Image 1: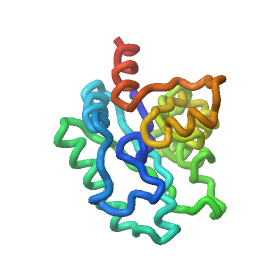
Image 2: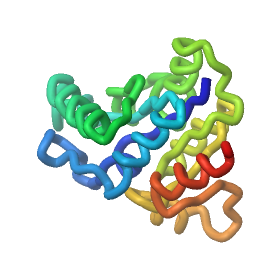
Image 3: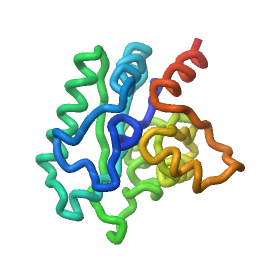
Amino acid sequence: MKLIILDRDGVINEDSDEYIKSVDEWEPIPGSIEAIAKLSLHDYRVVVATNQSGIARGYFDLDTLSQMHDKMHQLVSVAGGSIDAVFFCPHSPDDICDCRKPKPGMLLDISERLRIDLQGVPVVGDSLRDLQAAEAVGARPVLVRTGKGKRTLDKLGRDVDYEIYDDLAAFVDALLLEDE
C-alpha cells in the first residue's frame, strides 16, 4: 500500500491566521484538489492529519468541522479522487495531549489503524510542527511554500534539510515521477 499524509490548512486549503471557521471560508489552494485526485489514480491512500484548535478555542464546533471536511471530500470526489481518512486534533496548544503536532500521536494513530509502518511515508505540511511530527515517526517530511510555508522557511533559515516544493501539486508531480 502506498500512503501519503497531508496537513490540511495551508496544504490543501487556504490558511488564515484568523482560522478557517466555516464552510464558506474553506477554499482549496489552486491545484491541490487535482493533486489529491492524481494520487488516488496512482493507487495512493490519502490521509489528512490536521490540528484543529479552533474547536477548543470555540471558533467552530465539530459539526462545522465535519461540513468543511464534507466539502473537501466532495471536491476531491468530483475531481476523480478520494481521501481515505481525516484525523484531527481538537485540542488547544495549552491542552496536554499526544495528538497535537509536533507530537507524533496523530501519526502513530494513523500507523496503528492502517497497520502500516510510516518509515519513508511522505508527510506534507506547511509548518515546522508538521515536519517535526513526521521526523518523530521516521516518515518523510515535505514542506510546501503555501499557507505558512514561506514563513516556516524564513524561520528555518538557509540550512534546511527538508524537501521543499512550491505547493502540493508540485510535490505530487515529483512523487509520481519517482514511482515510474
